[in-house]
Image (cartoon, rainbow, N blue to C red; front, side, top):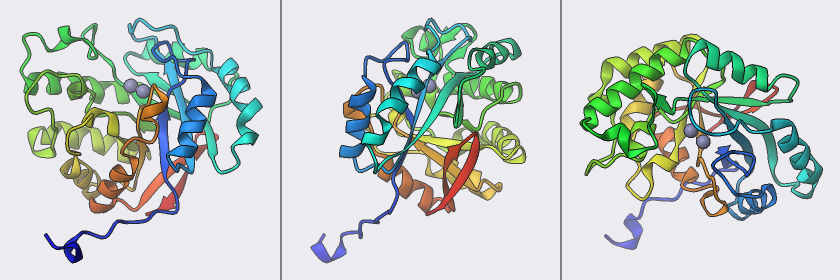
Length: 272
Ligand SMILES: [Zn+2]
Ligand SMILES: [Zn+2]
């Protein structure tokens, strides 16, 4: 291909990463300062820290959000180019796990809640055991069915990583597309859209594979989905902002009109 045929790189005045962890998450060692420095280095403009609060059987101590907020707010003014929001990643499962998570976050300022499923039938989808005896199709169907139930009994702003069921999977092709599970995606998206919520494009599931999910995001848009958030799910500084520009391109290609950021649990729409 001649140089004149190279696709033009799109330029965005904003670049968001709305799924970041710090050492306040039970599965991250990353100091807040290191995450902030990495966000600046990655050219991000809007970020949100979404430390884990899990009462769903995941074996992690829920984040001390008040202490996280205090440490963060003490140094936030040193990062004038970053719009920083305070969030949590709620491990969605049962009405009781939802209640305990919100009770844990009571009296803590939060701008954003991303609701995620990590546990299916008492097994953490992170572990190889989840995939034992399951085909890729079975692993994804069980996950999406759980997601469909969990979103209806949990309080959150945006549904996290719909493709977590493939992130750590052992199958030769990990990609997910709409045509694989049309009824399940439609069911989930109808509910998300009707209730004014949004979905996340999470770049971590792609790992080093080509980006996937265009057909999924396209269908979400077709059913009336207006906005997405974009997240790297970085637990380490070197992952902060990973492939978020590519995810923004994917949202744009699917016809999504807005990338959302959040303050006080309310979305702010940014046209793309
Ligand atoms: Zn997660
Ligand atoms: Zn996460």
